[in-house]
Image 1 (cartoon, rainbow, N blue to C red):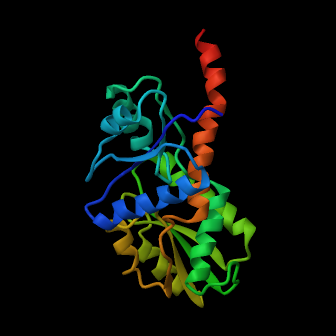
Image 2 (cartoon, rainbow, N blue to C red):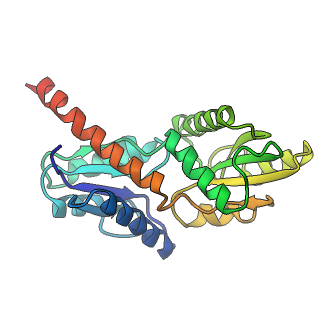
Image 3 (cartoon, helix red, strand yellow):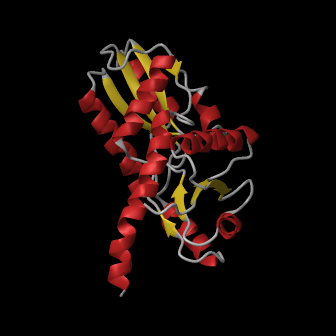
Length: 240
């Protein structure tokens, strides 16, 4: 496969720890794919922005959104910024989720928090950032449904830190009312920021760490990149 540059683009956060966590993820990507030119851009609250990062990367870059759900940023914002850049031949990859490897990453974080994967006495709240875009919300529901089938949890519920219902607090409270012996919030978030801070105040027995630089997240970044490279010959033939 051609070694086109990989430009990962994160949403960005006022929390400086968010940028550091994104760089940690890309460091793992670099270790997995030695020699690949990997750089980071932000849609907001940081720099470089995507057009600048693409200009720096040069022609043929593959843009991988460090986003877990589809929505405005992946369908409108990122394509518009690619179009405004000076870089020729840039292509956009799919967002990271939903993906079955993310369930593995979520269970990694639950194990680190002391929860045995599939514990039938634990109700899991899959807590996402939230979006007004129905496709983003549906992608979270789809992942929760896959997870509930994979493991004998008491239940796997979805909740959102903003823009969609129920809130994480509401989901935790409802599970308490239904008699769940233990409630674990699985943070379906990549990096620190406002939404991650909200999860800590949800009242759950356990709140996991963020997905961040998990091996699974890094592997998915490279899979999205490779998917674009595999499709390029087909796309180029269609243009002729």
